[in-house]
Image (tube, rainbow, N blue to C red; front, side, top):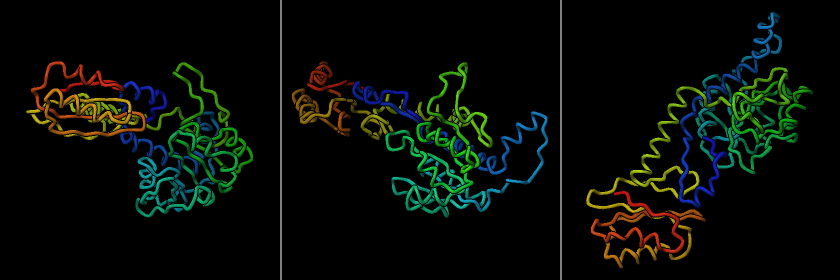
Length: 327
């Protein structure tokens, strides 16, 4: 899902669309979150470690069912809404907060604000993107609004949580546990050591960014991205590109050829393209245009009786980034 490792603006300036698979690992992440809800309320991480160390700690003290507890979901997109459905199946009450108005799934209730959600939730789970508005969204002030004795789960992006503030809240037992799958700084490979101030903390589950790391999710991601690349390569469709004008296109008619023209978004470009085609006595059978503030993308289905130098003429238009003929 994440594209933060790609220079998206530079790729767009080169006329390169970037695709991801925002839906393919939804279920895998949601299942991990629900498992962690149960683990935190039962202290299973620490009990597991104790048994491996030969220490027997059979007790019901501090262990609770998740049924009847309030789960606060910050970010009600594909993953957040799937978590909502699974949580209700566990008998949990669901609150959610999103900067974009979203219809609730099932019996979920939209919180009036992030602060309201933090104050009312027994468990807070984060499902927001990494951007300036979410950087350290859960800082000392936000954690201070959380219910005493609550839990925090972050399976979104490492920049969202202020780790030092979380450690301080754990040390004073304002928060009784956390499950963290993403970190501000992560090892670049499995050969590098993992360092975090959260290591060794009681009832803290640390996982190595594996929310979407299931065989099913990886298969779905491969299929989804491959299909998008084929649709772009063979038809010019850019639907769900994250850095590029989005066009959903049907297959070109058999009697036409398809032309893709990517250009800087400047006034008069569409007119210049049409003038070149008119001067070449080339009939346009279909035309599609979409733009971002920086890039324009025109797809034309044209009659096949065009001159052999038509591509060179289109590439010669000022502000052209690239031009491609498909058929």
